[in-house]
Length: 89
Image (tube, rainbow, N blue to C red; front, side):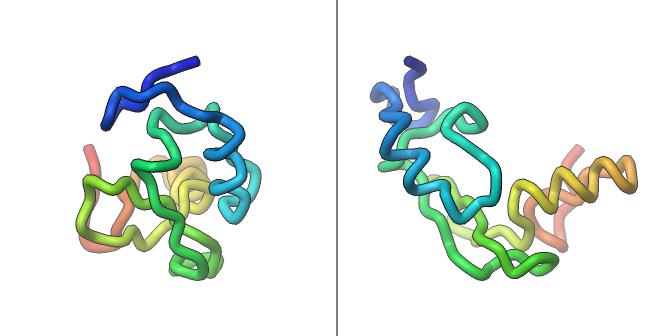
C-alpha cells in the first residue's frame, strides 16, 4: 500500500476506487493521493462532460478529466494540461 503524496497517510484503495467511479475506467492505482486529499467534480470536463479529479491542494477545477487529457495527448502529441489556459511541459 502506498502513502498519499499529499498527507502521507496510507491510501485506502477501496474508498478511493469508490470515489473515482465517475472517472471512467480509472482506479486507485492511477493516483498517488488518498480519498481525503482529492475531490471529484461531476460533469466538469469540457470534452466529455465527465467528472474531473481535483487534488485538494489545487484551488482551480480542471477543464479536462484524466481520460480526455490522455486522449488529447495520444491524438495530438501535446499535453494540454488540466486547464485550457495552461500547457504543461
